[in-house]
Length: 329
Image 1 (cartoon, rainbow, N blue to C red):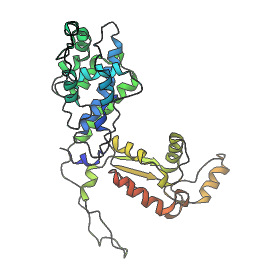
Image 2 (cartoon, one colour; image 1 turned 180 degrees about the horizontal axis):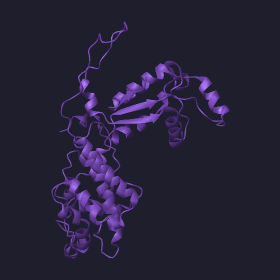
Image 3 (cartoon, one colour; image 1 turned 120 degrees about the vertical axis):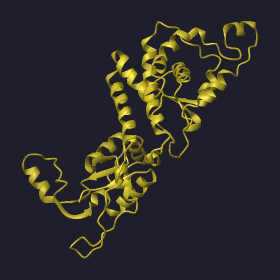
Image 4 (cartoon, helix red, strand yellow; image 1 turned 30 degrees about the horizontal axis):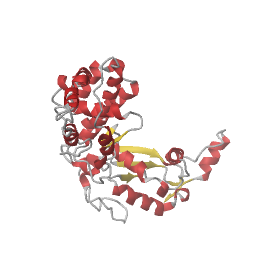
C-alpha cells in the first residue's frame, strides 16, 4: 500500500451514489485508487444508461424506500438511475470496496430480502432473489467494460476511453484521464528515497539550519501552487462571503485539495510587498494592479493576510487534513 494513503482523508468523494454509512467517517481511505476510479465509472454508467433509452430498465420496486434510506444520491440523478448504476457495479468482478463507499454487500442483502407475498409477486420476479430479467439487456450493455477488461479498474477506464468515447462528454473524458493520472502518480516509483541533505554548518551565516525530521516527504510531494491574492478572491466568490485572511480559508477548500491528490500547497505572494511596485504598475495604466509578489519590503507575512498568526492557524488546519504549506523565499 502506498505511503501517501495517509493524506487521503475524506470519505466524501464525488460519487453519484454512496452509502450513507460512509459519509460521516473521518479517517483516511484505505484504497483511494478505488474511490477515484469508482467516481468516474459511475459517471460513465449514467451516460451509457441514457445512451440506451430503447432498452427496458430493471424495476426499482419494491426496494425504493430502503434504497433511498441507506444510500445518498446526487441531486443530478434520479433514484431509479442510481439504483441501476449500483446494480451494474455489483457485476464488476474487480470491485473491492474496502472502504464501504457503495456497500455492495448491503445491496445484495437488500435484493435478496424480499419474500413473495403471492403467486403474482413470485411470477413477476422479485421473490427471494430479485429476478432482473426485465432489465437484463440494459445491464448487459452497461457491464460490457467489466467483461471486456475484467482484471483492473484502470483497464476498464481505458476500454471505455477507446470504445465509448463517441458518446462521452468532453468533460467526462478529461475526468477519466485525470483518474488514470492519479492512479499512475499514486503508484509512481519512489526509488532512492529523499535527497541527501547537508547538515548544519554549511552556511557562512551564524544561524543553525533546521531540517525536517521526516526527510522523505519530498519524494511523496504532489504540489499545487496558488497565488494568494487571486485564490482568496476566488474562494470569496465560491463561498459567497469575504475571505481576505489566511485563516479565513475554509476547511472544505483544504480538504478538496487533498481529495484531488495534492500533499503540499505552495502559497505565492505571502510576504509584505513594496508599495513602489504597485505605484509603478498603476502609472503604466493598470489601475487595479497589485504589487509584484517578488517586490518585497521584508520577509514578513503581509498584514492584509492576517500576519504570521493567521498563517500559523492555517498551517495547523492544513496539517490536520494532511496538507503541507510551502512558500518561496
